[in-house]
Image (cartoon, rainbow, N blue to C red; front, side):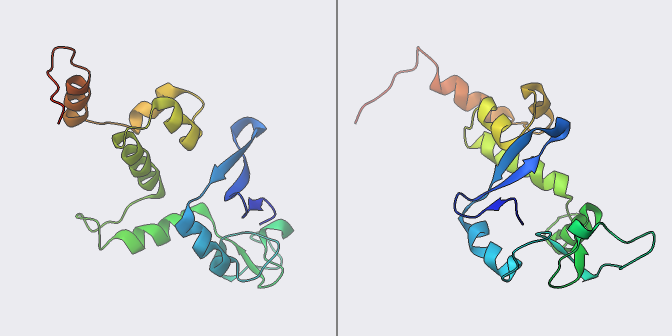
Amino acid sequence: MEDLDTVFRRARVVSKGGAIEYVHWATATARLLPRLLQGRQAGPVFLADRRAPASGPRAPAATDICSVTGRGRLSYPRAEYLFKTASAELDPHAQGWTLHQLRHSALQHLAQAGRTAPELQAKSRHQHQASLGRYVRLGEETSARITAEHDPAARRRSR
């Protein structure tokens, strides 16, 4: 939680290679965040459902435990399970979606809205634009629209 900057709606993250970067969130997240944090000032942002073991081989590091609730940091596999379970009834295949698919979908929607490759790279924090190819498949409609918009022989009517 110490890495959250609620004023500028961003969080400090350490990327691959140790570089410091920021992820940003929108209004809906800014509204929900205080309810998620419930007045806590330190510890993990996302908490597991139960208290973390205090000792033994499965005991997490002290920084991964909320000092107020005693609950541990929510793991990625558990977060993905919860997301898949919650999204199963919306999925046509009734299997639910993965967090990676959520990321893929967000990038696809941004690309379809006309965002440039450098903008997508900044949002996704990919090091190379070539890495965006697997996320962004715009399809025939986008190709047709771009061609039509940049067709020098097309007549434009002004009304």
